[in-house]
Image: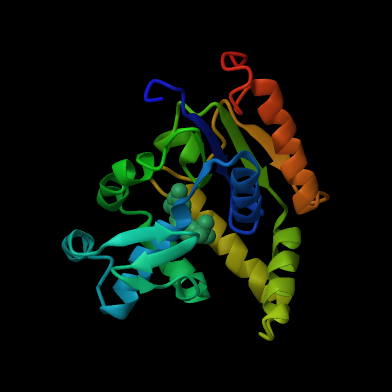
Length: 231
Ligand code: DC
């Protein structure tokens, strides 16, 4: 069993591209492990907010990391022993996550933690640098994209369903600002890897997107049926 190949599917993309829902669904269908790397950044961001840490100070951030215990269990996210699955989805937490994600020491210190999610039979890993940095050896690399207008519309619908009244124009501006921060940072910016397949989801439902990726998986052998079919 130990020598069996672990198949890795990397799904990257900007906020609101649908990568979370899609990656989770694929991992369920294939019975693969799942890594939501954004949740790691969000948990650290939440810890900064709760403990009033000046996250722009490198020393403070590293000190915090050394005493913070991050874990995931059955789809839930934990900060130390507290279930913070809902709290980390807060807009403010997302903003701070994007800011601390610029810190190279922080990124390096969680690199192995992320890589340890790769377990037999496979892993679906989603984030910003899954294909470029964390799993450059991934068997299939997908970059999920969508226009700002479409992503703002999706976010608007989600918030309205939660009973939160927002302005769609404000949401679009926030999305543009987050994209800029994630794409223009110095270390591991959100970028399309040279081996990535770019999928625009503007006119695709979640189900259609999942099916398209499952088709790629079948043709590249990322499900283990044709192990060396790719390159
Ligand atoms: O995917 P998300 O919105 O939950 O991610 C929150 C922030 O975390 C995102 O704006 C940038 C950062 N992030 C990152 O830098 N690298 C990743 N692999 C995942 C997230």
